Length: 251
Image 1 (tube, rainbow, N blue to C red):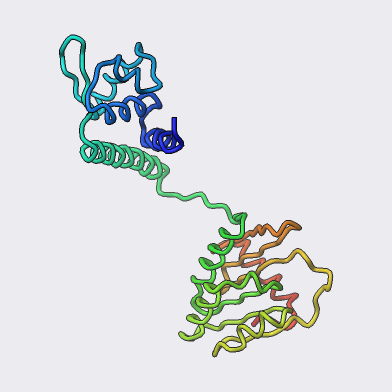
Image 2: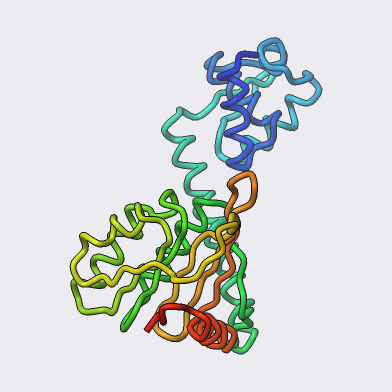
């Protein structure tokens, strides 16, 4: 079996076929039509299994059976098979999510939400930082000691907020970070007056209005983990604590 054929079989499995079904279907596409013996000679499927597998494929609408002696099988053409599998996938998707929605509604419409969420991995933290900052209506605070954690998307969101009158602040002890935002009109940039020189763990901070906050740390391998909270008592209390100890003040 070639690598391409193996990959195709795995793809068919993800679409809902069994390994044997995928192998028989591919074999029949190669043959055009054939008996169970023909299929077994081409596919890595025991002849005794071909009959039941073919019956299953017929039920899926992927092949036709000729009632001859011996029985012959013919696959539907590729486009018809593609549409059949796509339609089945969409039907199953609808069935699955209809049930999920029904279960959710049965909960009485109440949503149980944790106050604190954890996000792991640089890309996922990037996305969450953008989500948090994008929700700002009155003010947005962003801080980091690492230039690598200032993405183009962060800069874009803060620039757009400043342009529409949101109070935007950036705090960093790193000159490169401060210089990057100094050029943005309407963005207040400052360095903390008191910080630990041995801080090698802090990642990013994002504060939005008075009800959303994100804090991240970076481990020795450079992997980033963040906690965030939005619209919760935890978020408002943590923001107050951060602001009470910040120097200079974040407001």
